[in-house]
Image (tube, rainbow, N blue to C red):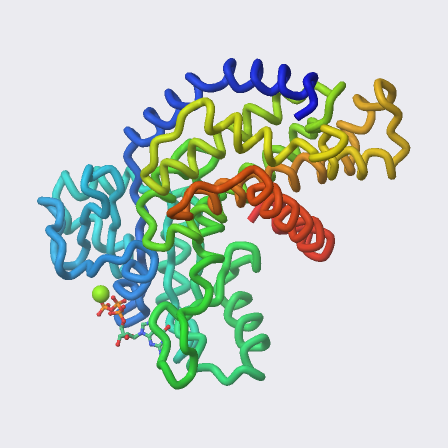
Length: 368
Ligand SMILES: Nc1nc2c(ncn2[C@@H]2O[C@H](COP(=O)(O)OP(=O)(O)OP(=O)(O)O)[C@@H](O)[C@H]2O)c(=O)[nH]1
Ligand SMILES: [Mg+2]
């Protein structure tokens, strides 16, 4: 690793280390409530099972919830609650104070609509009532497997127009598809990404990620969130640039990913991952970032600052952060220790993949 980069990285990691640990501890002490609302048989229980891997009917409800609105913890610590309800409008009057206070604490609402039948007036009214809560609401057009593929697009457009829902706040899903129609659930990763994104603002996204059944999808949402923050910071991971802001994001990301894997990591390991991912073999510089920078007319010591605030700077920052995240996942999911070159290989491949994905679909790191 280049000396200049090593020194800057070590300094930036040291500065950030304790803070990241404290942030994780306080994020995990939060309380998060996700509500699943929708008409009978729309797929509420199936959604809860697909996301959290629990059978809602078999877990102890929180005292105070009735059979019309039920609340239960997802994680052993009881910090993540799922609320399962047909609707909110008319149930509030029937639940006791404990359940009502949980309704007031809901962070995100997932509204399920059964595609097999389309939207009804009642559902539109329900949804309008839920929107009045002023919480993020995601609409899942569930059981999409039952709609013929060539009719799906028209169906989705018509249904969303009927419900008055924007495309960015809807996901087409099949949480429990007919095996003959779809071998795997549809849309689960998009649902996770949407919820994660909306929880990032209030610091509850880590708590959500940790409760998810699918660790890979949980990490992907974390990594994309960090890549987006890195794009905003626009700092470059190259010598001569101020990499403090970027290192802060990446240290936090590595710590968060380790939390999902329930692994303890130490400062040396973070330095190893960052150093190996970002350092070049021959020149001892950040190859990828530097090459991209050169292509944009970067001169050592010259235009770093201008570049950092440019669109290219943002994309380099985002892509390297994505690569660091994926390399961390690879590192933590392997049973055997990973060598520096192996780690770099993952970083290179994933950084490159991210660049092509973002080039084709810039919305991946945008809102929604
Ligand atoms: N084809 C298909 N069936 C589904 C899907 N999701 C759920 N179902 C089925 O729909 C039925 C109802 O699903 P649940 O998850 O129990 O729905 P719910 O909203 O909890 O239902 P209630 O609690 O009775 O209101 C079950 O038979 C599920 O297997 C889907 O994506 N595709
Ligand atoms: Mg149910």
